[in-house]
Image (cartoon, rainbow, N blue to C red; front, side, top):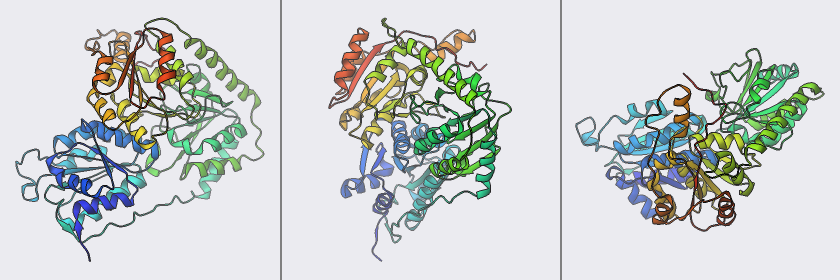
Length: 537
């Protein structure tokens, strides 16, 4: 049987799984892998400035495509720096594989530089982690890791001693194990159908994983007479102009929705674990739909659970509603809730002062971006304002939903542009979030990633300042020092602009969304207090 090196076998196995890129930072423990990447030229290595950005890009790629994404790093500190992005993929349930080097075989378990038990380090945020100690174990371990990531929507990880990469292996790469979603037990459908048909005041709560079932969800809502609420971060799954779409529930959502949502007697939860305190009904019967068994939420009630392909399940539930008569009085109350928020939302986005109000900035973004744009949000106050005021068409919004890490926006935007180079990609970030990943402005320039970054500059960590003020705590640590973003952008190979008026912002957005190089627009932003935010004491 012909042999190949461990590094060559790894790359061939990844190719068979459809992997096109590996994000990472070079270190001596993965030199063998880097050499094979350079010589074979089949998988592109995206070299970033910090490993956390590599893992965040991998997580964002998995969110964009639903496919396996890969990052790689040095042993010890390299792996430690990956943890932030791997945590994002793990909590949000997306398939990411991390490959890290390890000490040479004869130094494992000794006081060798940078040595640490990597499996212990990864245990809390991975579904599979393994140390490989023989060249013929690499492919079986790779297959197990990849299978775990794809079938369970999770993070997997393998540690490879540095001297193993150049050894020869007899184990050949193989086609990945294909998994197919079998139809749920008919009894699950029967139970869910009976609960649906019992509803007088139904509501649908849809998460990002319900995106594939958009058309079926809309048909179900119309047949059932149900409002459709967004879970956290799922803006754009159902277009804002859909007749029964009522905006987001809870943080960053429709402030009038909670009172209506709590009146529901049946809730259909689709692809989400979002169930915010004091926003949801206490007595409602709840049906959960999830694409994987491990994504059933223990955070919300479950009078019925259906697991499998979400679009297929929703289509089947549509058939179960044949002949159902929706409650016209409830539909009218849903429409009233929608209209009340629509009127207020319209007025919130009409400001014309400087510094600009976040709602005004969001409205101007909405007015200029294309219907199929990808919008990467950082974590912080800017995210809440966007989710509150942006009226989505069919834009794709990327967000750190559960992990909620600052610094997510730029890596996510770069990964999205690599995956979909022909689509508009916008990054909306605050000055706090951008400060964590400034060095990787150079990464966007290096790879010619023509993204548009909008930086809300208010000189503070606004969300933390607001919360601390509500709690009567001095806002120590919330003031931040910012660079001259225009000069910094230009020094990193970007175009840089500073907004002097709302009209400037309109002009920049109109002209720069088609730029062939990355663009940074700094917007002086008022220190607005976000309304309706639940303060957790």
